[in-house]
Length: 481
Image (cartoon, rainbow, N blue to C red):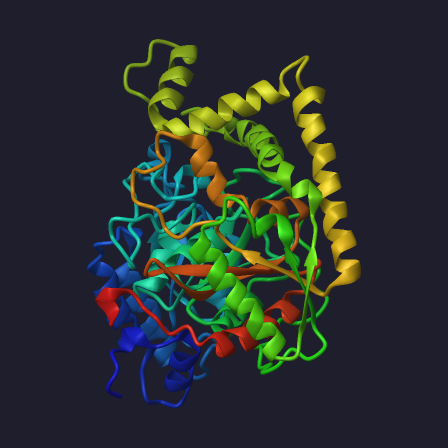
């Protein structure tokens, strides 16, 4: 084999290990060496020795597990027993959980090897990973640009070939948007598809774990091992059918609606051009295109930034330096301990959202703000339901822009929030969506978002796989050419 081991996709690596041409230890060592050299700051913690020991046990086993010892990166918002878990926040610096998140347990049971914890916006609040308490991650396509967020580390480590795949979490677009900006595949499943047990909560009615990978088939393979009901999470769902590896080459008869509101003003010309070219491939593959309107998506951003902060203000109340969080030295009393622990431990964006959410939930304002936002959320859900009476899936850009320079939007929260304008409506509706790379603009990746009704993951994966082949996106960051 002439190519470096770290160029292997997960599916190919599994085949080589299963055929005896490669050991899990060799593969893990190759990726660990690459992850150890991390100019993109994709990882917050790497467990090299633990990963190698796990790989050796897999090699020594009489039966190969289905994921065969392939390394994986885990977003630092997912609890991992005895491996530091900080949610990208200084308030949890050095914290080691006593249990592992269900989705991480499931991939480990399937044979994946956890290589380390990936960088992220603090408590998953952000669109660039610049809100990490440990410094920003960088985009492998251009280290002076953001990788997206909040799962920026999980996207960057896959794009940089530090691992073949990773797990992220998506509240308002935090898997799909960084996948788009880093030129990889990212999928947010139907809300409830994946257990949230062990996921440090940001907004409980929106948070969902999902996979990031370089190919649609790798994405499907990882997703297949994490979906399903978990008795530890009452919001998790029994899965209707197994997730299968997609093999579709055409999409004959597929009705695709492109969302008019997400193809116009505010979307960069280069992004719109790449997405339009990808949509033309759908017709080449036997599908039909029709414009679809989701009129209430224009209120999606405002709705999200009332609901999500309200839920975060409740969820983050537990970080009080008594149950969770670092206790400040020489605090004078209980109130001072609360003030100092939260004031010093939380970053600026987290404080901003806690204050906004607390205000929206306060007496006299609850119905005017939070209650009204929930009613608009219902209208957005109905918009999607009406759209799916006309078409099978919806298409739009994943992000309205390509990756933007580090520091460009840090002092302009509203401009930062607009990075998720295409992904937020899908999250509010609890629907599955996948982002695949569909071209370049200004030399940087553009993402195409495909959205389907609840539980339509297999159809979305099939369509994405057929489009992936038709588009033929094989570009890679300059340093990997």
